[in-house]
Length: 213
Image 1 (tube, rainbow, N blue to C red):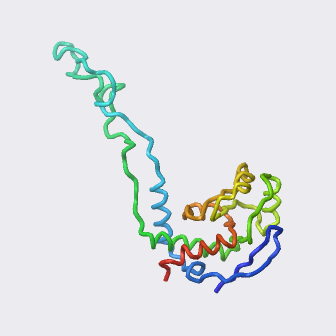
Image 2: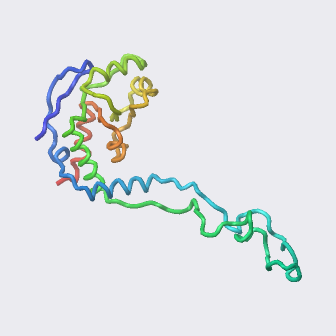
Image 3: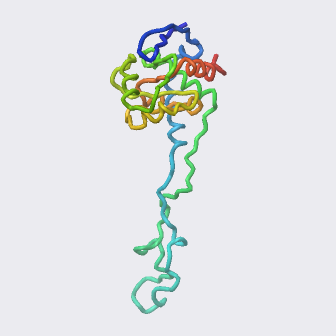
C-alpha cells in the first residue's frame, strides 16, 4: 500500500497515512480514460447556435409578385431559404441533444486512474486541517507557499463550507475550491495539484473504493 504525508498549515509533516490500493493503485486504461473524457465534455455542451426555419422568420406572408408575366421565378414567400433574409435549411438548432451515457463504475474507474497518476507524480497534498483565522488573501497565499507545491494550478477539495478559505482565495486565478461531492474527471485532470484535508482524503477513499475490484 502507498503512503502519503500529512502536513500542518506550516508545511511540516505531522503524520503518515496508508492509502487504499483500490483507489490509488489503479491500472491505467487509455481507452476508458478517453471515453470518460469524451462523455463528460459532451454532457457539458450547451448548444446555443440556432438558425430559424422559413416558418420562424417574421414577414413573408404576402406573395412577392404575381405568378406569371414578370420574368422571375414563381415565388410564394420572401422567407423561402432561396431568398436573402429567408429561413435557413438544415442549419444548427439549439434543441440538439449531445448527451452521452457512461456507467458509474466506468466513470469512477477513470477518476481512480487519474488519482493514481496524481499520486505517482507527488501532486496530491493533504493537510490535517485548513483553518484561516480571517478573510485574507495574504494569509491564504502564505499557507499555500508553505506546502510542497511548486508552480502550478491547485484544486482544493473540501467536505464542508469554509467561508474564510473561499473568500480569501476568490481572486486567485490558479486555484479552485470544489466540494467533494462535485468532483469530476476533467477538473482533476485540468489542475496540476490536488489539495485536501485528512477528512477529505478519508471521504475521497470511501467514495471511490466502492465498486472497485
